[in-house]
Length: 292
Ligand SMILES: [Zn+2]
Ligand SMILES: [Zn+2]
Image 1 (cartoon, rainbow, N blue to C red):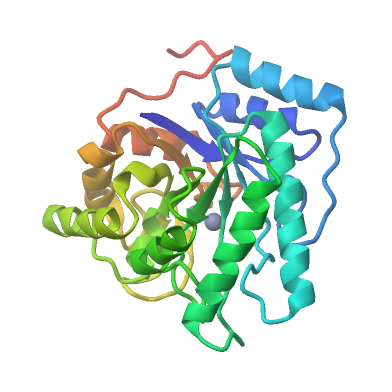
Image 2: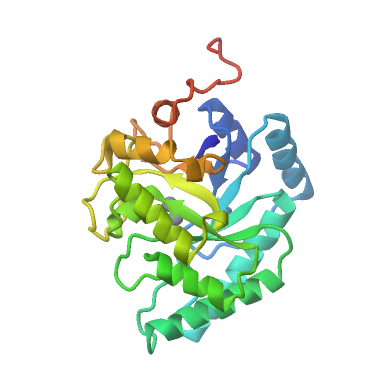
């Protein structure tokens, strides 16, 4: 089990690694470019090499990139859909060079599509094209909270995208604990969690689980509203997150925190240590400090 966090890559992509190390994150998630805009990503060979070297030397990994939020692989506006596909091809190609394990994607919304089935077809066709234009990095479909017509809030949705892709082994799942709860899967009891993970296994396959976003939820069960909270301070709470962290199904999965942080600057050491404690692990070792 590796416990890490989303970190900023501001000021140079290698800074994401040093920021991860500074808060005791064993693996990192980052954005390539601005998540709310169409930004063309460009790194020099030196920048790519520095990122890879720092990650390797600091044993930070496996690392993931979170795709921009504006992509919609099911957009009924064909121009927006094409733009989304080329943006994700670009991101995947950089991920390949940066030795990133997976690109985490909210696949889009079925709003304006003739039917939900048609929207799932569009998503699958788009992913096929993205995979054909990249080599090693996995495409991680993230389950969503179910806001509006968003695709991927149910395991059935994600499973049927996989079916359409012939279960290509590069398409995998990123499970967000807050989104799962917000989408109406009750993981607050030990039995409930077992049942939800069985559902996930039936539709998607737990062998597809490549990453977990470990977040508490600011909104209530079934709210369909995606708002993250610090570990133990939200409606999921410590007990539910503890069941999750200690479940055998996720023992080999890397975890990435996406919480607001105690000071509001994003994931921090107290949240990492809170999660480690729930998993039964000792506090994080932070390199460069006197603490062990
Ligand atoms: Zn996400
Ligand atoms: Zn997430």
